[in-house]
Image 1 (cartoon, rainbow, N blue to C red):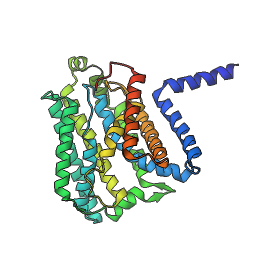
Image 2: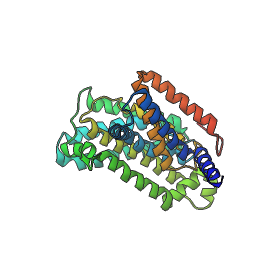
Image 3: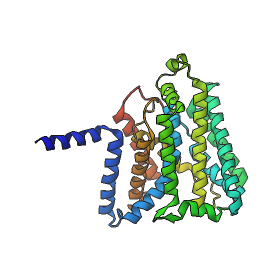
Length: 325
């Protein structure tokens, strides 16, 4: 009886915990996928799912920071920034190994500036983050279109390709990159002054200001970091694809990056949450999308389902402060 109660308590705790619930859902989805398409849950297929989920997971990491900063913070430009990161990277690298580091530095710098502009507009000029980031996304897309001119602008160098899709101990490089990124962002959120300030600003910016926290600076930097992370994801996505000229290739990450954050338990009101839950959310979404693709659901249908998932989460979680979008 005692053991049974312990098991029941453990299960209830996992279900009530968004992070635990997300991991449980991912396992259930794998089982469903295996039933729908035998072989869906093999080790190799799971690795392939994680490869695709890694890019969303990295983008959603930046989105996590922005949403945690509060003030209705959300970044609708991340999809366009992912595209920009891939296009600028390809234009600078031109398949030359010696240009990879330069390409990465330039991508990080430019996308960080894009994020800073988002932060300045929403913080100093009180433009609603939705409007500010949506407008910036349109501008970024126009810049990407100008750079490409509708034709490929170069490609990933062999060293970048090996870094992303090359395998070590049977595991692709992008998964090591995602692991390193995950460890870094978790440490920053839990053990740095910036992480402490971010939580306090998101929870109550007035109290944080009175406590000496540079509220506006933290929010501006957070938008910068979020955009830079999206740009880095685009850069590595270039290594996965080999070349790029499609100016909409990153659009598929905008809505899912928000859903992954919410699935993981981060409140859209800000001030609470973490990246571990976002990782689980990204994995859940990728498994769900793979199942939908397997049963031949078109892209527009998948977008509808993702939108319904987000609405359902917002209605069902209703935790912390009143959700503001």
